Image 1 (cartoon, rainbow, N blue to C red):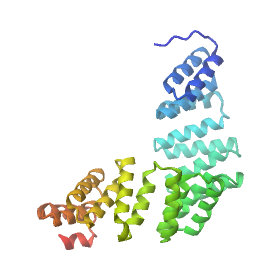
Image 2 (image 1 turned 90 degrees about the vertical axis):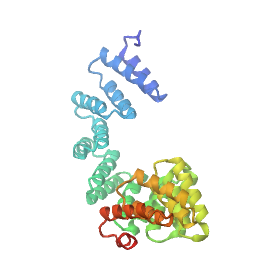
Image 3 (image 1 turned 90 degrees about the horizontal axis):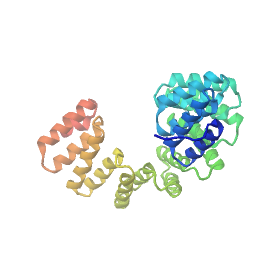
Image 4 (image 1 turned 30 degrees about the vertical axis):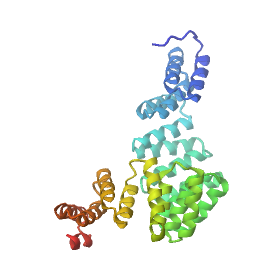
Length: 322
């Protein structure tokens, strides 16, 4: 139990903010709570505690505190915005959209709320509205790199690579150190078969953020697609797995590379891990079945082809190899 000498709510609130800035979230919560005990209508203390609950991943508690802020100050646009983020974290997207629209109604120039609303509509697969909200954010703030980046992601997903590249270029123009923009533009280049540009972007993404597993995975795919660089591909898949031991795709592709080199034992270990991590992917079972066939375990191979067919009844290769 902590004991607090001060009875000055503002002083305690200031100390709570300092604790939060230092990353001592539990202490911050205790201090914000003490400030609220002294002044039950201390709006900023509720908001600060809610923000700390955000960082602790305690979304229900954060929502409760943001709701109290709104009860005390119905025009608190940031509280609506932040409550929406917590609703989104709980997959309650309709509530999030309602809060973000309210934040924009209160403050029509709240650029961040437009971007967050775009994210919510993207999660709801309402891509037209998502693009519209990102566009409104850009109209308000023409150098908002995240709005360009997010709109580009939608265009890329929809296969409109021309628009995607234009937006990724703008995002990078306004934030040349944003590794994810290089990564996502690289994926768009990959999907549009411009492998040289994709390779350059993945290299830049890795340079800016050497701890992001998907960048190594995607560069590994490029290496894998050229038989001269299979060992480089394996090295990149190794790195992706070290960074993220649950990166299913890297186990799967490393297994394929090892299988192609004739290393059946290690390939099977990786296929087993890919299956463990994702038991609903027909390709995991199909390729493991193929590897088991080469290992001489025909019964297990047939079982895997059976499972692949169960997951994807239209996968002709599974029928053929079975």
